[in-house]
Length: 195
Image (cartoon, rainbow, N blue to C red; front, side, top):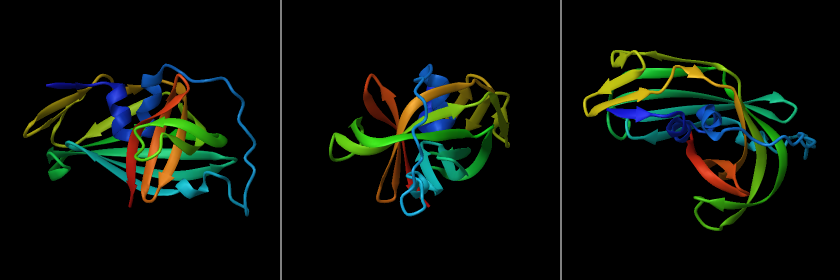
């Protein structure tokens, strides 16, 4: 049986919904101004729906705005019976509340895991997760575990801890990269495809 930690879930979500529990905190910097260009904040380009498939899990990420340079990151995970997100659905996961990304600044960031250049123009954000819960439903659910024909996976907890982390967002074509800042370097946590 595969044990699934909150850090592993971050990769599944991205962003944000679980990364924060795994990161151990972020910076204390104050939010930068959310000046607009042609009436739009720098984060407007990220609004929409994205998805990520990994193994038996597909994460659907909906990015909306709450205004004032803050994005809401709502991730829902569907567990499939077969790899490559195929076969019948055996479980669904909903995390409440959603995570947020608050705009800090735009600038060059030293990146790892982004195809192409190692320096990219990023929108730096403060990722925040408030305490909450994870709800699992479906025929493959047994407590904190999800069973499928090729094995099973278990969450470490159905509780979500409050946390913050410095991160970055980057949109290249139809791919949304969610990056986490570690020792001055922005590492790809998740790469979603726009739907």
